Length: 73
Image 1: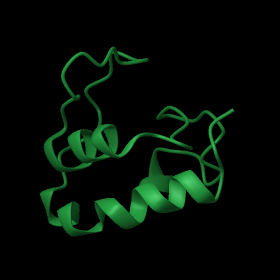
Image 2: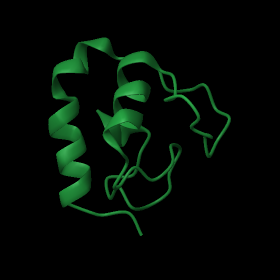
Image 3: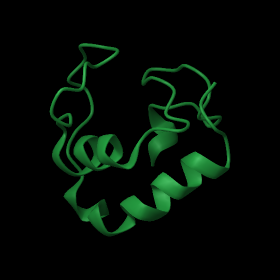
Image 4: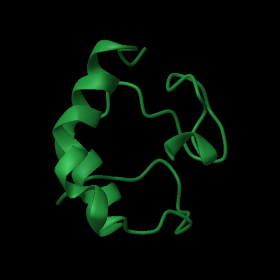
């Protein structure tokens, strides 16, 4: 689902920004609520990403994958 807008290699740029190594609070805010954590300055001003609350139960797994598979540069 994520690779529709984010690169299949999470360290690379695409329609959506690179997501490798993204912190859990950012992942949860973006995926579940289509918002940002308090104080976070977005890299892009796009409103293209919809909220996907049905994925709330997968946030820990997604955060672990993005942290382990491909740490941010």
